[in-house]
Amino acid sequence: MKQHYQNPMVNKALKILEELSADEKIRELAERREKVLRDEAMFLNEAKKIGRLEEKKEIAIKLLKKNLLPIEQIADLTGLDIQEIEKLRLLISEPGESS
Image (cartoon, rainbow, N blue to C red; front, side):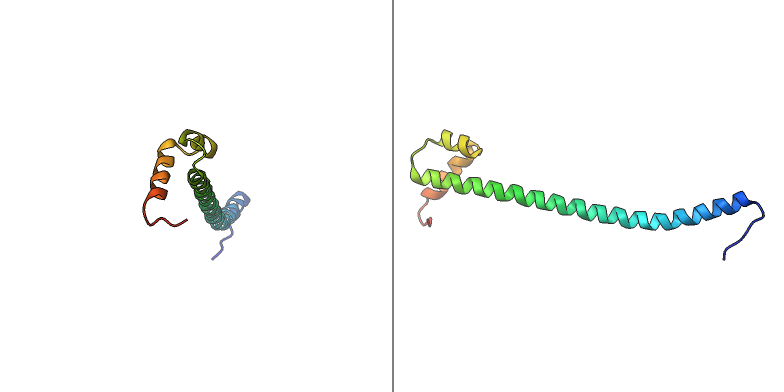
């Protein structure tokens, strides 16, 4: 129930309080939306990183199979570290590996 006071300043303060209460709900919804958008952007960025890493590994495997470049050069060209290239080399040299 809305009360009216004789003092116009009290009425003005009550009106502002009502507006802020409504704004608080809107602000909460906006904050939730922002969080969802940030989470989605983070998820997409992570997926892109994983995709780029997989692409680098595929390129490294192709270069290893050609056996034309030393591991150091493959690491330099792909941006992968030498240990990762070594793991890939071992993986493709295992029996039962499909090309």
